[in-house]
Image 1 (cartoon, rainbow, N blue to C red):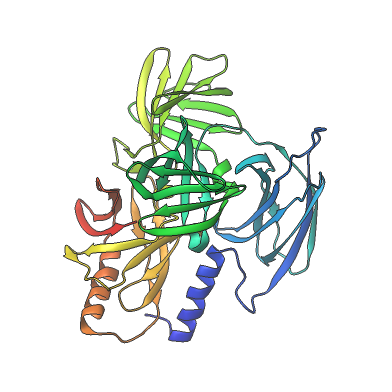
Image 2 (image 1 turned 90 degrees about the horizontal axis):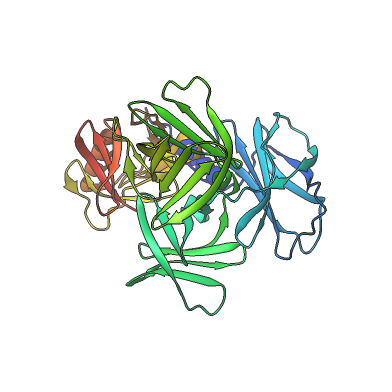
Length: 413
């Protein structure tokens, strides 16, 4: 049963505000303060940004703070307004559009009063060669990876190679024959053009950029984790996991290869859409693990990253095209939440993504009255979501939600 209109609107607003890192009006909050420092006697260069991200127990971004160091040196103070629940805070120093120093996540217990977290230790951020994640307004995200003298861009399940081009300031890269697809960086901010829309003033998402890279394969089952400059290989009936310093990467064509110091192990990663050969689950990278001369293929990266950070616009629902001017959208948010417009009303709900597939929880929403065509489309859309069991992408990068092997609906990024 749907909640009444005032309650639905309030919950929807809270959901979207949380995604943007703001507290809803009237919400109880408190202030977290602290300082960032490192032991090394190294002066910070100009242009350093102090970045703090705070997430709730579900992993949703609920607050953040961004400020320029302004030439100051460590310890660098910070302050951020947060809600009262159990939280995790992660801080970093960003320079030249990349992570320079980063802290381990800090658990913050629920409370109502201000809290001083003291001095949080920073370490040099490992330059692993994995994509940087940029977060824009309205929770839109892009992944960028240097490739040769250009960049490899990913938005949802769409990949594009960008080449350097002239710009009045900063560094601009655009797709060949498509100047509307671009990345334009100026200091610690990057603007993107994609799908006819412009997304300006995007900031580096520190938690997602610093996250561990995980790859998996089947028959025999294996798993690789690269995190903080270290690599681990396990599975394949190996009694003791293979671990060591991750060396590289060495780029060759579209692939970059990592080695594990002192081990006969190589991990080759190619940033393109790949699918698990057992479940069909899409992933943002194809991976080849080579051990002792034996090569095994698999997938790498978080499949959920292909869904989040995109405002998906429905083009077909139940095999029927969505009429021009009718707005049916889907946005996967942090913390397993989903929101959008269902032709007539705004809706919100939850989703679950596991190794086996994708499913949606019951949706709530506003209760506006609309025309017969909008109401029919809304009913078909919400009913279709309830049948979804997995997802895939077509050759044009459109998201396809499937019920078993049958397409339930299709979305353009």
